[in-house]
Length: 258
Image (cartoon, rainbow, N blue to C red; front, side, top):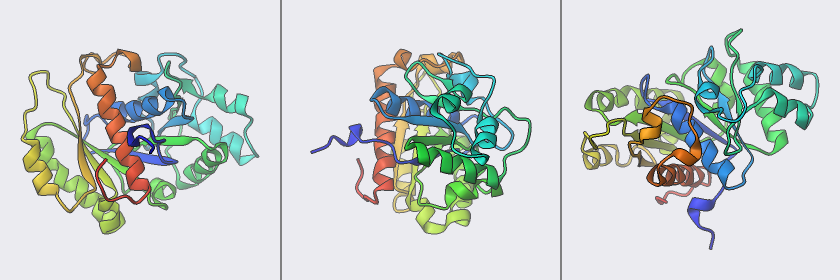
């Protein structure tokens, strides 16, 4: 029987922050690096409207001056050769390729139609950092299939209060099926411990979302330096494995927790 924690990520996973500073970018990198470290082909995609910092936060091996826009421009003219594609990507030491948005224009749905087709043709998984806005029109190609959503919320009372609006945004955009494929992931950014009762959160969300996972405080993440997957604490890497397995279960339509 296959260990659920060793199953590959689905073709596409969306990572959404419940608010600014939730940890969506670090979670995107954690999920992508988890897949890459076990030998899977995976690309972390900057799916924010005008460009985020996923490459600056995670490209500890290669930081490319090119990115998503160049891949899209090349793909519009025909299939992109592997060496050309790799040249546009930044890279982590775990083996994740990163397509950062250079930011010379705002994201469009046509761009993501082209990019999604190019990634599928390569047979690689993609983890998309969408920031904290799900209803933007350019995300339509990413929402057209029953994609798992990892909704990241910091472990703070004020952030938990704002979680309601994030869930409402998912519900308004995708209905109950969208909520049913959402994995709420609580990111602890406080070295003193868990500041909110997670059992109360699980009770409150019961029946609304697929499940609730947690990512513990990690000193390496808290330093704000470029992330190296091997420098994360074992508990942190195990947490990313659980979230990855949950996303896979969602994609496969399995209702049971992993």
